[in-house]
Length: 290
Ligand code: HBI
Ligand code: FE
Image 1 (tube, rainbow, N blue to C red):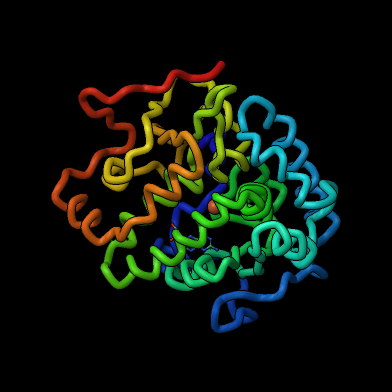
Image 2: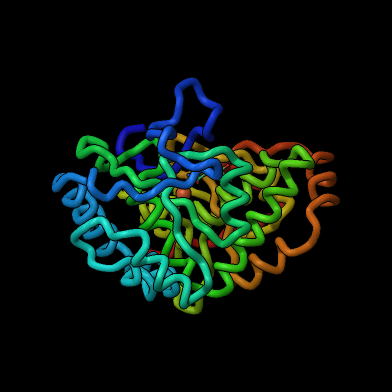
């Protein structure tokens, strides 16, 4: 795991062999909580400032325009922002809000919040020794990685639809398949633009090294987005991704995921599961963008 910062959750709440970090006693029944702003130390604010500065300077030529255009909506880069201030701007832009959570929350609670256009943001900050790699999502990953694209109207609608789809997937016992969609789009998605390949996934955009790996390295494979193919694909939780799926617009993503997934889940279950990084015969690779 040396030098790797996936910056996202390798374990889902309630799975894994250790409990999630965070104080769940202060959460409401929907798992949301007040942002415990008074608890942030000067060291926490400083960690935020340094993480923000490091990521911001990497964005040109690697992050998609929609992300770069909206990142300033997070507010002043020197201190951890107040969730309520961001929510006020987000509500005006796309009718989304952000809500505090103590950390990872159960899948159903997570889906229910997204379906209500509420994005759960972990309120605690990683420790200085976790600067390059944090095992669970913290306030920096959740805010910097996820919130800018919620200002984009089409992506915002995709996230709500994902939440609604998640509630349905829970009833169909298909959460694992749907989690792969989240992983390979919301966390690790790439988009082909007129200017070239760009990242829109939060796990890439909040990572110290994965931006360059995802866009500019010849090591990983990059293939066109295909919903069933993606749902068959295992992913890496403890290293940079071996494969990325490339969309050509957020509209493509929204449209591909609009239909009822019931028959899609059934079709996927008929097919082989693919190891992370598998290339299928005839599949076209996207070239890295150097
Ligand atoms: N909880 N706070 C938080 N953040 C997540 O990203 C998250 C979660 N719970 C469940 C979950 N993600 C996953 O199941 C997604 O893969 C769908
Ligand atoms: Fe995330």
